[in-house]
Each structure stands twice: as C-alpha cells, then as structure tokens.
Length: 495
Image (cartoon, rainbow, N blue to C red; front, side):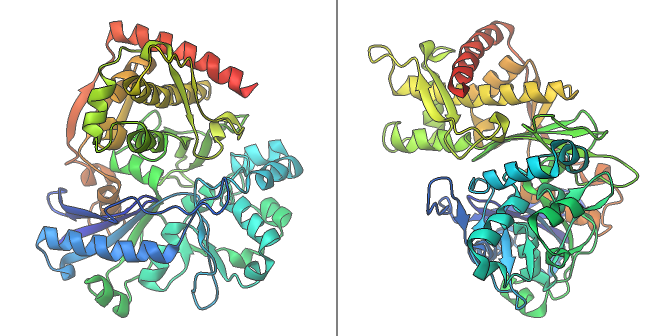
C-alpha cells in the first residue's frame, strides 16, 4: 500500500507516492511543466485561480500513479502541503468567488499596519506573535473594503490547502497551524483572536471548522475519486503550509533544528520550544505541525520573496539565450567571490517583511562597465540571495535561535555549488542536503495522521542524506567581506 502527498505551489503542483513499508518515494510528478502564471493586475498584486490548482493536481496525480505503476486504489491516505498565506473565498455552494490573493501579494500591507497600531503592538505580539502584516486576515480586510459585493457572499475563507481538501472531501475545515499563519490565532488564550476579528469586523462564522494537523480531515468523495483515479473514502489525514511541511519532510520538529528552501522565495525555518517573537516583527512565528497545548513547538519563519525568482529572471533576461541552470552556475563560477565589487539587492518580488515592508526593490550597486559582464551579474545575484539569508538569520539569532546546521532538500538553489558554498561560508553553518521534497513529506505526514506510522521518527527513518557542505575558512573570509559591503549598501537603500 502507498501514501499520496500533494504540494500546491505557486509555480507548480506536485504529487509524490510513498511506499508505506519502505518509506521510499516510488514516483513523483508535477504540473504544469512550465511555471504557472501569477497574475499581477496592478504593481504589488499577485493572484492565481484556485480552480487551476485543481486542474494541475489532477494531472500531477495522474502522472505520479502512471510512473509508479500502481493502481489508485492502492493509495491509503492523502496529505496536503500548500503555499502559505493565500486567501480563497467560497460561497455556500462552495464556488470560488474571486481569484486567490496569494502569498507574495502586497496590497494589504497598510491594513496590517493599521491593525497593528489600533489593536496595540504589545497585544498583537504577545497574543498573535506577529503583526497582522500582509497575511490572510489583512487580505480579507482588503476584500471587505474594496469588494463588498464579493465579501457579502462569502460563506467561508480558506487557505489554499483548505480549498484543495474541500474539493476532495466536500468538507470545509482548517487547522490551528493554518489559522496561525493567517494571523487569526491567539496563542495566549488558545483560540481564534477575538480582538482581531472584532477590529476587522469579521464574523466567526467565516472560519472553517478546526481539525488536527495530523488526523482525519475528510474522506474522498465518490465523484472526486473517479476524477482523480483514486478510491472513494480515501482519508485526508494531514495538512500544513509549505514551510512547516518542508520542515517536517526534513524531520525538523524540535527546538534548535533548522530547515531551509530556495525556490521562488527563500525560507529559513527554525523550531522554537518557547513562546517568543521578534519585537520588530521582521520574522514570523506560527504554530508548527506538532504544536499542541501540552508541547510548545513554534516555527520561526524568515521568508525572503526575491530569491529564486531573481535567479530565474537573470536566466531569462541577462544570461546567454538557451542557457540552463547548471550552465548558468558554471558561468557565475568564472567570477571570483565578491563579484569584483558588484552587489545585487534581490528584493524585487513585493515588499519584504524582513525589511519591515519597506519598498526597496531589486537594484545593483558598484556596476563598472569596463569590468563587469553577464557572469558577474549571475554571480552577484546568487551572492545577493545568500546575503539576504544571512541578514535574516542574524535576526533569528537575536531571538535566541542558534543555527549550526541547516537541513535542505537537494533542489532549486541548493543545486548550485556557489549558493551552497556561499551560504555555508558567510553563516559559518554546516549544510545537510537530503533526498526529499514537500510532496513526499506530505505523504509521510498522511501516514502519521492515518496511524500507519506510530511516530515521526518511524516515518522518517528512511530519510536519506545526500551530502554535507562545511564552511571553507579561506572562502568564508571573502564571503564575509562581500557581505559587509552588501549590508552597507542595503542599509543605505533603507534610509
């Protein structure tokens, strides 16, 4: 028998099938094969059609089952991972009312800032552990003001993973972890925040029923089972946002453990065993997948919007035409550490929480027409991404999170030798790369939720470490020097 994991990303939807006995991934697929479209009707906006995610999911599941050479009836449980902080609105007939306002949309920043001041900064930080910022609650407030004809039809608001589960099961439910990422959860009183709901004028009726992260969240409808090639009644037993789920897939569950990703956005995610927060709300604190009343497990999330998307922009618009990512890495490697004085601030994908939502945008510094070429720009881009990681990790250090080892999947930016060496060097940390992905992690989460595995330790006993990257002392000094120059330029841009 097998477990199915679904990862609803903004660039693609992935599906992985895991053999429950060996714990090994036997097949994976994704769709679309080119990056999914993110619609930006206005600057700073980012929307996607939730129904497109469903279309992509059907194709990904179909492909994974075909590659695995199994029957859909062999799937025993389903887990869902999803892009965090998105807003999906449905009416009483479970019909989508408008495109989803996704994670990198920044239209609601002012709503979060006003709420932070009006509710009270201390109240927000001690109860919500964050400023309402640009998260799901603030996006819903934007809809309430600018699209009242839509807001009055809203039966429930959901996160992207809640929507996919609803399409599968017909049940509209969510989790504490999900509500915390939308900044609806009061950690001190262990309930939905009455203060936030009252301030924004939201009825509690808008909130879906709450289910455990691990456990039964619904069963596959007969009509949907036929559509997906699975069996009726297959349980959905796990759901989490992509970053908590990525941490789970790397078996990062306890205080001091760190997970990182380098996809469209870049994330460093650390587990804290006590309630804490950044007083400037530059990094975010949410309920981790294993958080409970009895056991505090909070995920401290550093998210940088402009990371892999910068690298892909360089590939499309600056690098020689037709070049692939390994060739782009080789081109960048022809240039010395520090890119001969060229620095790039990679913040061109919406405002950055880490920078207190200041509109810095992407920019180049120190460009010399007689020295620099495409290779310098390619290297400076990757170094700029790494330096933004370092800048944010220093904030996490201030919160008392000691980062000595970073675990990551062997994918995206972590496939680049320059990125790996620069990150290890400038942070002084060991990087461990594993053969896993978010969809596989969601499949194992489903196994935990269904009782197939008795513990996370059992579920991840087969997790395979691919390689270890340790800081190179000589290179580290050079990277640290380049970082100080980059940091000085960033601080001037923030003035």
